[in-house]
Image (cartoon, rainbow, N blue to C red; front, side, top):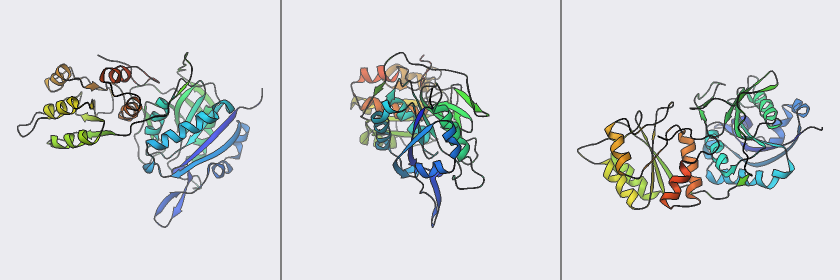
Length: 333
């Protein structure tokens, strides 16, 4: 059997950056990246395309669609895909691709770096090698490979801003590790249904992180301008009750206007449970809000964009939201 054929898709990011007059800027193409790691040719055959060269701060849902379309167009020609991407929004893009490309039996691997590939002390080269090993393996679906960890695309979060140990898997085990040039799989999620590509997103999904004393008028403003609002609450979840204004009434007006509201927690681990306290249970029992449970905020945002790109019918939105996709949600109380 010959070597597997892998497509490297370049999008910019730190891994491809060089120092400019105002700081690091993405300059290198995917083909130029490969020149720094010629030994990847021993792992697989590689072809390259460059979709754009952006700091990931500037990557938006429209760019997720371009990446997904590039993979769709080339899906039959390659055994796997590597997407080099900036770390700051990589978890969002990996989540977005998890909904735009569902049930892939081929690996779609995101990676990047905390230091540019031209630096003497860089994590770029090893992350690229590990990503190509994962892309040439029998793993499947969208994943993120970084610092030896293999993380499902819907569970990744950037938890360190500078260190090489940049990403964690939230409320779900890592899929495996890359050690000494070998894939060590812990979990092998497989799909028994055909691959499906989607081509629509509704980017009008807003996020409000509650802080003590926050004015509920902010939620009203966001609901007026968006199709959906995700509220990151405290602890296991709930909405504050103030004498000066009611989050309950604000959310109710938004729901009555046909908007979607999701309650989640700003606590990183263990998820939400609105049934625990009155401030949460009163909302859960009386309003048709959705609850994120153990989903990451990145996955909630991407999933809502994907769902609302298909339908805004409330019952269908709820059905799709609570349907597990790519291991994004494990429990619903």
